[in-house]
Image (cartoon, rainbow, N blue to C red; front, side, top):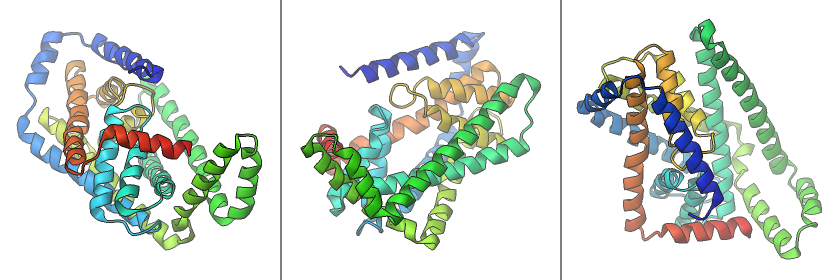
Length: 338
């Protein structure tokens, strides 16, 4: 709680929540909207959400095979701990926690596991960029929303540049390991010897997790595994709409999913409180599907589905397997500090 980043994120979230609530013209209607959610659709929403976890675990298990033997139960536990951690800890710490979990369970270098997480994020970005292209091609933006269209264009370009730069850097590490390590060692010599030696070991282990980059067929398989990960993500988006009596078209679901992913990049409290609600509600209103009150209800329900189930399951998984969140954080910090 003493971490200034936590308090800054909390303030940003509070500001976004206040802004979202300030756009509600009728709070009685908003209250009625919350109470009118059709609970019959909660079951298919939860099923779709758990399928997301399963598909993510299957894809990650495939990536992990290039670093050592990885069990599906380990990758699934890691994914659950990841989502759990990202929902309650700042700076997307869940990604580091899942590397520790799998590293401990299957005796794989944590740095190598982290390399597979980076590769996984690149494929996520690739699929999101495909969705963005589909939105820009098929969705008409009124003049009043030209700023949104421009922002999507510019965000897409920035994402392409960043992803391409990261891919080039990873391939340089993988294909020209020795020259790159010499270059890295040159810069590390300005650090204390204990730190530089530890970081060199971490980077060398990280490179071991990039073996998949040498197999184009394996990269294609990862891409094909990434498609169901994100297509199943459309399930909760669609069924939450059904719970409010609307059918969101495919392109609309893509837009809401994309905006939700974008909201997670804004610094805020863990779990994307406030940022997710305001941006998702704005996307629903842009589609013209619901009034302001119902649009915010939609965002609240969708966020609740993304937040609470995995937190509850994460607590159960951590308890069953004897994980201490504090201990995992300690080991993660030790790994990053060398």
